[in-house]
Image (cartoon, rainbow, N blue to C red; front, side, top):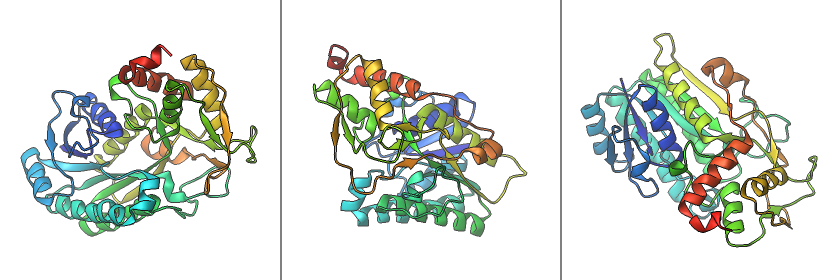
Length: 327
C-alpha cells in the first residue's frame, strides 16, 4: 500500500514522511510548498507540488501511486491568525478536509490518519487531560480541528474507512538540524529569536497556581510525534482494525515556562534574565496530556526529554542563524 501524506514537506510533515519511509512504508507527498521545504524530504520520496484541496490533483496522485491510506497534516495552524481570519481557517481546514475525504474515499483509500491538536480541549481545569475530557476550544483554530475530527469520523463510518485522530500537544525539536522548525511562532524558537537579538526572553505571567508561578505545558519531541504517526498508520494497516480512534500524543509530563527558559539558557550559554510580563488572556495554568491510551492502542510512548528537544532545536536554529552560535 502507499500512504499519501499531505503537507509532507512541512516541519512536522517531513519528520513523518522520513519516519515512515525509513520504516519501509511507501509514501507520496502532496505539498504546495508555501511553507514547506522540498529539501527536507529524502530523494526517494515523491513530492507532488500542489494543494491537497485540489480534488483533481489528489485524484491523479491516488491513481498514479495506488494510494490506499492518507496521513493528513496540511492545515493552517496559527492561533492568532485564526482569530483574525476565521473564514479562511474554516474554509481550508474544514471545507478542504471535506473535499479531501470525498476524493480519497472515491479513489479507494480506506485508512485515514488526521492531524488534530490538544487545542480542541481549550483550557480545561484539570490536572491531566484525557481523551474523555470535554472539548471546548477557545479559538477558531481549535474549533476547526474539533470539527475536522467529527468530519473524519463521519466520513469513516459512511465509507468504511478506518480512522485515527491524533491530538498532539506542544511540538518541538528536530530529528536533525536541517529539519528544524523555520517559524517563530512557538515558545522555544521565540526565545531563541530574542536571545539571538540580544533581548530578554519573555514570560507571560508568573503568578499562576503552579510550583514556580508560570504556565506548565506538555512538550513532545517532533521525532516522537513522527513515530506516533507511523504507529497509527501501521495499526490501521492491520486487517482486524476498523472504526475510529482518537488519542493524545504527548509525554504525560509537564514543564513550566520558567523551566524551559532555564534549560534554554543552559544549552545556548546565553543567560539573559527573562522579562516577566502580564498574563496573556486565555492561558491555562496547566495543560498536560494523559498518554495511557496511546500506549495501549498504538504501542507508542515518547522517549525524548525536554532537553533533547531544546538541544536539537538550537542546532537547527544555529544552522539557519550562524550569528547565534557566536552570541
